Image (cartoon, rainbow, N blue to C red; front, side, top):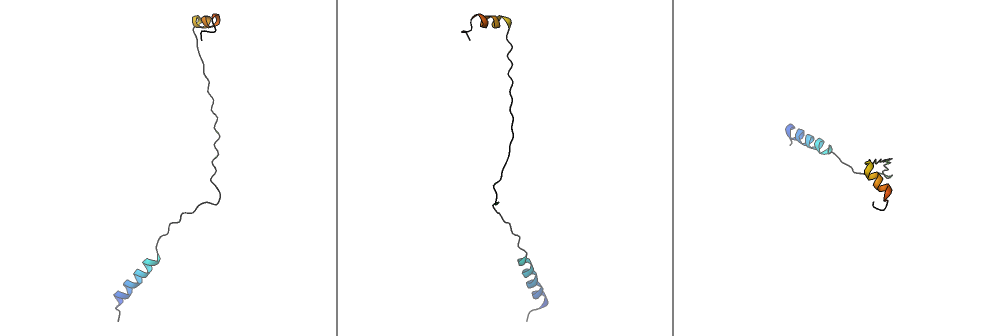
Length: 63
């Protein structure tokens, strides 16, 4: 009824059909926690000329 080539072909199709890849996306049970310890320091240095500094001392309301 079936020849050996047909039986071999049906067997190969059955084997290939059983090997289907699966991709699963699962939500984690616990939330994702990201700890960031950030320290920002800023230093501002102002250099004034003596004439400007004296003017500021004499008239502090100018600036």
